[in-house]
Each structure stands twice: as structure tokens, then as C-alpha cells.
Image 1 (spheres, rainbow, N blue to C red):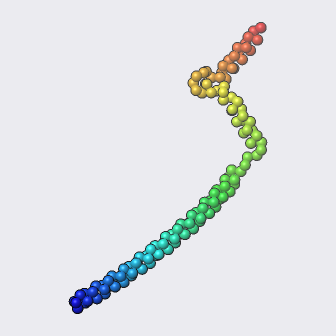
Image 2 (image 1 turned 120 degrees about the vertical axis):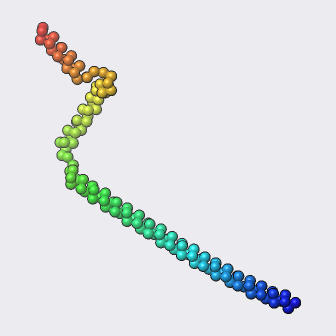
Length: 127
């Protein structure tokens, strides 16, 4: 009976050692996870700070680029803008006349008009 009691005491001590070791390992795991979470939070904060910094730098660069563009290419005078608008309106007006020629489906449109005008002028002069 003594040997059973001694064995039970030995097992009880071994159990206490195992439980103690388990608690120590659990505490180490908690510390490690806590450290990992802190590191992760720190990395997230650093990434967010870097993102904000980069966004600010990008805005500064875009503002500088815009400033340089206005210095290099100032806005044209109103007369030039007006002429440009009239030019593009004229282009849009003549596109339908030139479209078939540019697609290779019809002859040169201006030459035909000028040729008809020339024939009309020659006929008028002959009379």
C-alpha cells in the first residue's frame, strides 16, 4: 500500500510539474501572440502613415506640375480660342463631304466642285 501511495504522490508531483509547465507555455504563447499583435498594429500604423505621406506628396507633385504647365503653356488669348473654335466647327461641317473620299469610295470632292465651276464659267464665257 505504501508503494501505491508513493506512486500516487510521484504521479501527483509529475502532474503538478506538467500543469505548471503547461501554464508557463500558455503564458509564453500569450506573450508571443501579444507581441505579434503589437508588431502587426505597428506595421499597420506605419503603412497608413506612409500611405498618407505618399498621398500628400502626390498632391504636391500634381500641384507643381500644374503650376509648371501654366508657366510653360499659358492660356491662349481669347482671339486664338475663338479662331480655334471656328476652325473645328468648319472641320465638323466638311467631314461629311470628305468622309466617302477618305474611305476610298468617292473621288476628290473639292476637285469635282471646282471642275464643275470651271465648266460653268467656260460655258458662260462662250455665250
